[in-house]
Amino acid sequence: MNGLQFRPEFPVFFVVMLCASLSFSAIAQVDERFEWPCFHGPDRTNKSTETGLLKAWPEDGPVNVLTITGLGEGYSSVSIAGGKLFTAGTADNQTFVYAYDLDGQLLWKQPNGEAWESARAHARAYTGARSTPTFDEGNLYHVGETGLLTAFDAETGDVRWSLDMREEFEAPMPQYAYSESVLVDGDRLYVNPAGRKAFMVCLDKTTGDVIWANDAISGGAAYHSPIVVDAAGFRQVLSMSAAYLYGVDAETGRLLWQEPMRNARSNNCTNPIFHDGYVFASSGYGWGSMLLRLLPSDNGVTTETVWRSPLMDNHHGGVILHEGYLYGAGQNERGWFCLDFMTGEQLWNERGKGSLTYADGMLYLLEERGTMRLVRATHEHFEEVSSFEVPSGGRGLYWAHPVVCGGRLYVRHADNMYAYDIRER
Image 1 (cartoon, rainbow, N blue to C red):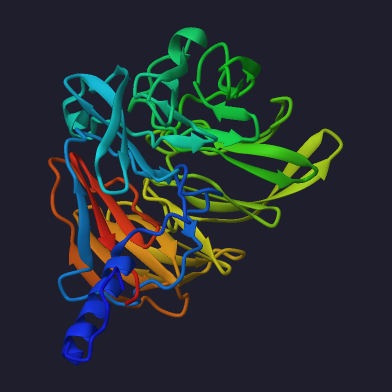
Image 2 (spheres, rainbow, N blue to C red):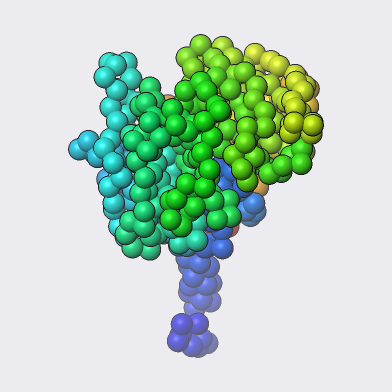
């Protein structure tokens, strides 16, 4: 036992306490087997596969094991891979990408373009980095608010390549800046510059060279992140503009299908969800949600509307599909919803609004004013078992999506990031 030999004269309680202390130390350390390499996790379902997590928290919340400060403003979440934490923030009119070790020590910090600040007074509170860095095979990819896409060496922070999307693809500045977290699939990177020369592009992830560029999509920039699926005979990238939900052939970039989807503010923010040939999409500002079925056709893919509903008009906190049921919040305090995936029927509705993630049978609901709620992932009724208040890291609402990884719950608010030990003891 660390060179300590047991002797009969040692009091028994001393040995018991020493073993307990060593056991607690081992449990408190993060489990590096698990990774969360991009926004909403490795498969972009926003569901962790971890088990052995607390099913209830102490009255004042789980133990805070790490606080990182100095991130600047922003709503970038955290990605975790290779024993490192990655996020982004803005300060002094500059966007920065950060890499930390799992103990919170800064490893590197690199600029990634000018920061965005709206000229409209009501939007100034929304400033800051939005994109969550994407890790893949030793590289880290990030889109700055003003459209600079950069590939960094994840170990050193050195720039591998960069691309000014607004200049390259004649893209106007999005009303609320670029917010997308890029998608990497195999040797390809997919991103939406929303430009006149190309709305979506596919790049070689190693060089940044353009493989294909699709200019057939219209409607202006959205603020979500795409997903890749196999459906109706194609590997498809599912994405949105401000006016359409659409799918393109991942190999060629050909537009396979599109469905009108424009809300009153023209800003679709919630990632689509795919399951078993069906696509769910949700948006705020009066739009609601819908379920489409993707079917093969002579020209590629056709869509069939399964249901439409004004319920769960998700603003930007995300929606999760779990065991046939959808969980997420509506806009303007319409509350947290549980809907049947195949019918759109409401199973329950509870007051609140925010972002969420899932792990080990539980939903982690982060209210936009800072309350973290632990809720059982059941369609039968809303069952909250614990909650605590996340400290403030500055101005603005708690809009960065929470992450569960390596036995920790990560929560970002403005300048600060907090990590909580949520393992069972």
